[in-house]
Amino acid sequence: MGTLNVLRSCAKVHSIKRVVLTSSIGAMLLNETPMTPDVVIDETWFSNPVLCKENKEWYSLAKTLAEEAAWKFAKENGIDLVAIHPGTVIGPFFQPILNFGAEVILNLINGDQSFAFPYIFVEIRDVVYAHIRALEVPKASGRYLLAGSVAQHSDILKFLREHYPTLLRSGKLEEKYQPTIKVSQERAKSLGINFTPWEVGVRGCIESLMEKGFLS
Image (cartoon, rainbow, N blue to C red; front, side, top):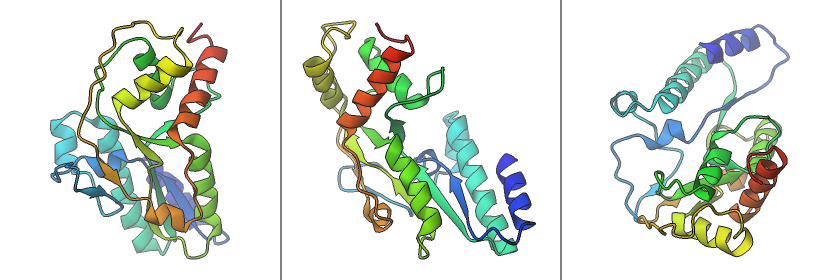
């Protein structure tokens, strides 16, 4: 497992004071807790590997098992480990291929409504800053959920219609609505993170999609 290989290497270098693990909200969400409006998703949530397998959520399974192994190794070897769990990352991107967040926005523009649940977004620069703060803040410890905002399918479509009407492939997109969900920002804000509005992230994402030829 790649995560353990990195940690083994870190354990050999005594000058390394802390390791920050990039995990995912996928290592939190897939469990037996119903996501009702009164429930708050926070750092106490752990995905159940059995449910991940049953639902064929292989990415979430990989992130869940990697984090589990990382915490076990860190405890056994005295490593100061901090885990960062971003939601769906949006904003400008540099690579020539789509990441998941960019694909979500592109699919909405193209009329694909198969993923019509509330989106837990976080802007890429907030993710970067959280990693830096996790290294620099002496009291940083444990897990940090990075959930900048929860946006409804209808919220995003309204934003696209107002600001990018010529990009939308279909004028009859249904504004699906799902019961809202709540996410905790308390621990992330203790690192000094002031989350960027999701609208800024969507703008940055669309600009990159246009620059790289995914949109015209």
